Image 1 (cartoon, each protein chain N blue to C red):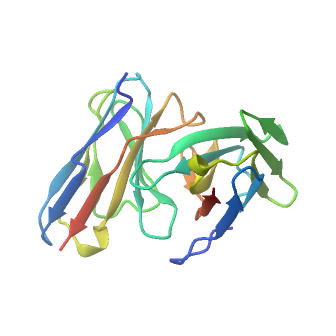
Image 2 (tube, each protein chain N blue to C red):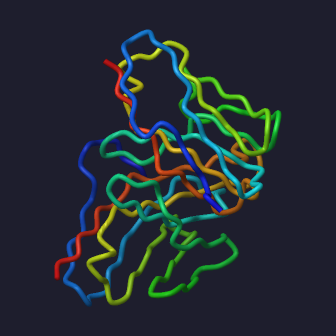
Length: 115
Length: 112
């Protein structure tokens, strides 16, 4: 789950390797999950999403896996490139009830890709 | 489409001053929201709106006001700025609350 602090988790990989970024979400009732990429000085950019009725979804070079049993989300990036270097955030959303419309972000992971 | 735009990009305020951060989107999205991002942390929801004339509080609403008189605009007002409001502010919009949110470039605010 989220932790409060100034030090984000980091992941360093070599160009061409596959990257796996993990996220533990907090609300077992959340039914929509999104991965965002944030480059320095920019706003978060949508990468891929998944709804709770799925456990895997693939995009271009990216795959999101959802394990609702342990409330875990992962983002896999294939053939990581230097342009993938950024902070990656997972976010959870509950589309009903009192949390309607409230997107909750995780702390973020810094991905550094070395040429 | 310009997407989500925010002004200003940078702002410095003195404690006690008030100001309005502007946010506009041209995608005809119903849902808009404001977040703040502090160093080493994810984004925290301040206020959100599910449509014109409707707003609600998020996780950290104290010290901020919003209004939604049109679909396109969702300004965030700081009533009396405090150093604790030094942060980067992001506006986002989406078709609906359970749809992908698209973010603006952010406003970096410093309160002295």
